[in-house]
Every structure is written in structure tokens, then in C-alpha cells.
Amino acid sequence: MRPAPLALVAVVSALTFSTGAFPGPAPHRPVARAATLGPAALRFGRSIGSPTEGHLLGGTHLEDAPYLRVVPAYSGGDVRWGLEPLVTMIDRAARQVRRQFPDAITSVGHISRAGGGDLDRHHSHESGRDADIGFYIRSATGRQLLPSRFVQFRGDGSSVGWPGAYFDDAKNWQLVSALVTDPEAHVTHLFVAAPLRARLLAYAEKMGSPAAVRMRAAEVLQQPHGALPHDDHFHVRISCPSHMSGCVENPAARTRKAPAMIAHGRRGTLGHGLVTRPPTPSPVPATPAGPVPAPADEQTPDEDPSPDAPPAAMPVPIDDVDG
Ligand SMILES: [Zn+2]
Image (tube, rainbow, N blue to C red; front, side, top):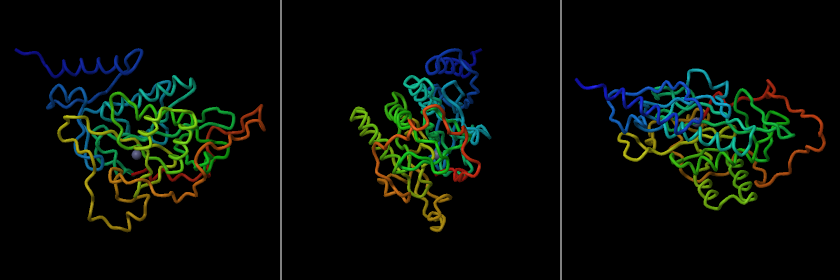
């Protein structure tokens, strides 16, 4: 009688995974594995189909950590499953930002449902290769702010509806840098609004970041067409791992959808993967990219006027999440 090879492989896989990517005691990992897959697939799980028309087998669950949280507004429904390289990449990037900035906490939104498939208010996120990551936000005095939902920012680094909240250039660039140089996953898209893209690249240049990293970032940072401009979070997509049969790199063009819906934008029918052209100028009044004068910290040296949460009246376009 033969032992149960699948169970054995699954255990070995789980051990390898937890010791390799996460320091400290291995957290409980409800990693679903499909019984019909071979050993290679068991390590990675499988992304089937495309980001806009697909599903996920044997996904990996993103766990909370001292340096990583799921933003409360997006924590319902356990939409935090992804292909292993995506999930571990997010964890590696979050830890890298934390190493640079000891107070940094990375804010994650939706990834995929446990088995992937349709996800309300998203066009993609179906095959375990897409994830939303909130911006790092700082107060006027540099304190990290952790709102309960994503917050919009303008190209000058100020928040659209939250006075005293600023786009944290240093941490956001560190995250971008970590994602685009990840040793295991290959990022194909990193959606963000054009003014913020310009701001990040200008910051990176000012700080003397390696040209190769800046070029790679410039390649994948894009403002999508036919979807939200992504002025409140990054949307990151990784490529199909090599030799993963059934994984479809790009969404198929949809030709029978009503143009009116596409024009509507927030609920447009285009998936992110359709968006590979260079960004066009943002409808948001773009302020000059590049170093922006820091908010006047010196005016309020002894106190931090920024509340920990955005005003209740702040516009929340996030409910129509993204493409
Ligand atoms: Zn997204």
C-alpha cells in the first residue's frame, strides 16, 4: 500500500513556504490545494485563465503581520488569496519597507477570493495574480496614518479630502522599488495615477535610486485606461509563472460590451490587462511632478494636527474599486 503522496507534498510545500518567506513561527496557513495537480503545481498553486476571466487553484492566503495589515474596508469576504509568488512578493516588499522605515505598515486591499473568479467591483483579480496595495500616508510631522479605507491623492502629494494627510514619497517609492526588483515574482503592471507616477519617478531620481530600478518602475507604473485612475492605491499584477499551463497572461479583448459602460469609467468593462499603452495626461489637474515643498512642519512643531482617520464627509470613490 502506498503512502498518500499528495498529503506529503502538501506538508513539505507548506513547511518550505513558511520557513522561506516568513520569519518566526509559521502562522496557520489555510492553503487550499487541489488534489489533481502534480508536485510543481502544488508548490505554486495554479492561476487558470486570465486576470479578468479566470480562477485560482491552490492559492496562498496573505496573513497579517506587524508590518502588514488588510485595510478594514476591504477585509470582508476574505479576499486575500493569491498565487504564491504574488502573496510572498507582497510580504517580502512589506518587510523591505519596514527594514528601511521601522514604523512602516503596508496596507493591502483585495487580492482574489479563495478560488478566484468574479469579484464584485473589480474587472480583474480573478486569477490570483492581482493585488491592491494602499499608499503609505504620512501626517505633516511624518507620522504614518492608517485609515480604514484607501485615500485619494493629488500629484502635489496632498490628499483630495483629508487635510493634513500626505502621500509618503519615501515609503511609496521603497515599495515600488521592492516590487519591481522582487527575486521571485515578475511584475507586469503597477497601476497608479499619472501625476503620482511622475511624482514617484521624480523622487527616485532625486534620491539617486539606481537607474535600472527607475527604468523598470517607469515601464510598469501606468495609469490605466477604462478603469479608475488609481489615485488611491497601487494595483499590482504579476506575470504567469513559466511553465504554468492554463495561465493566460493578458485578458482577452471584449468586443461586445456597450461603449457607454466603458466611457463611464468607474464601472467600465475593460480589464487592467488591456491597458498597455503609455498613460495619457490625467484628467486630474496635474501639478508639476518632482520634489514638492514639504508641508510646513515647522509651523506646528509641537503637535500633529492630522486626525487618524479621514473626515467622514470625504469622497469615497473606492466603492467602485478598480479595474
Ligand atoms: Zn485592483
